[in-house]
Length: 129
Image 1: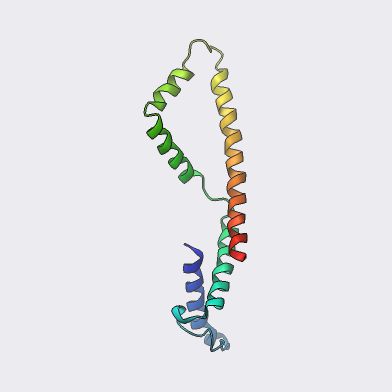
Image 2: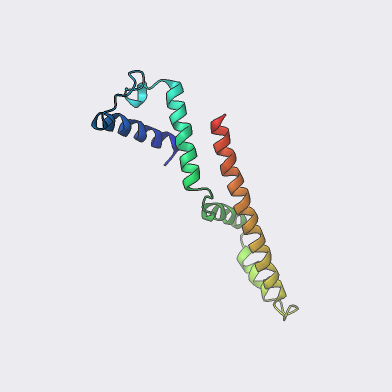
């Protein structure tokens, strides 16, 4: 769900429930979502954007990996065969290559998670400005 959809749901629910709680909303904003003043709508979208960012501070990496894998397959169609041949190389009987690759993959994963979190926080700040 994006911030604007959440803001619209929040607005409509808030307006509907306010009378049940003995609260009268402002006449300027007590309108259908399409008619809410732009500054009020913008504020609600920004608030909902921050809430969504806090609920999901780090987005899943799976979509990123799927895109990367698609790119690799397009550029190097036999990548999986080349990787298997590299890992099965008789010149490396110790298996250090695969251990090294695992360590590099873990390092890259941590870096991607940090970068992804930074990008998410930047998106929140950009919406605030």
